[in-house]
Image (tube, rainbow, N blue to C red; front, top):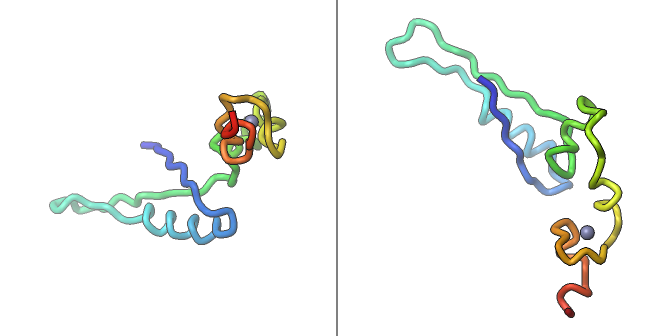
Length: 93
Ligand SMILES: [Zn+2]
């Protein structure tokens, strides 16, 4: 079984969040009548500002459509969700 959790955490506390997540997600599990326990394992990926960033090193062929845009301090795209708090012109319109 494989699953994935994406956590949004303060940028100055990523290690604390990662340690807490691993502690919560790794354990030994056994049904009440089982003789053998199963070790539930977890691992952290690279950190990133969004999900795609977490896989950037593994998926080098993935297009980097949004990075240039995200690195702009603001933009004029009224539908942009990245700069939602940074575009003063939107709230004035
Ligand atoms: Zn934008």
